[in-house]
Length: 252
Ligand SMILES: [Zn+2]
Image 1 (cartoon, rainbow, N blue to C red):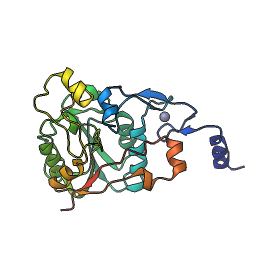
Image 2: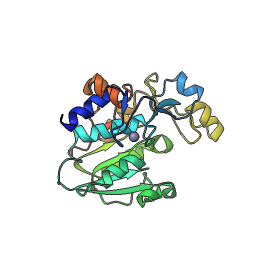
Image 3: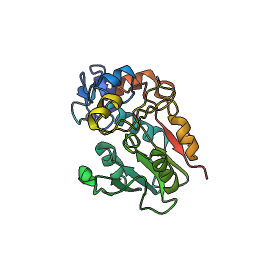
Image 4: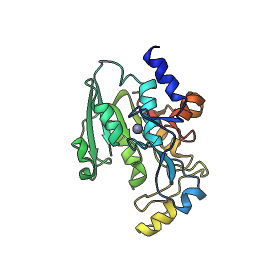
């Protein structure tokens, strides 16, 4: 029997298989924190949930991101050179991308010490140190909700992307809200926790998040797992079907 057939047969006994470490299990660990507002507004991509691989700790969002990059882009299957910027780099995704000889991965954060695994340098997303049109890809997930001037941050991502370059810009989002909820009177960590679900968030994005990206100049290339990933694969990877990927492109 050929190895891949044995491999597939073993899958019958397990509900989950991680696309990072390749290991299987029948259970997942918890990730995230619980706050009433997260449930009240049905904030996608937040809240305590069973979503972490028990072997490597990767969560549902990271699995979706890697699935997308593997199946919808050429980053991971060619020798073509690409330049990638990761802001607040996600450890597991960084390891995959940085392991590719065709990719040059820069990593940055406003607090780089939190990301020492990647030689991360200081980067203010509202004032990036890079020349115009430097990168083929920018990956910047769960960052914009921390930044008061998010419009400036989005325009900086646009500026440093090459023509035809793309960015992945995930945020915690409530599709219950037509408009993004932001109140300038809310200033303390305690108030932010109650209103936004996390002490250092400055807003809860609503349906108009797409409009903000389009206003910046991007073309929106949403990736919807409920339409683009088969049920079997979604179940196997334990992907959250509610969590759509906000992929944007700089056309010119
Ligand atoms: Zn894993």
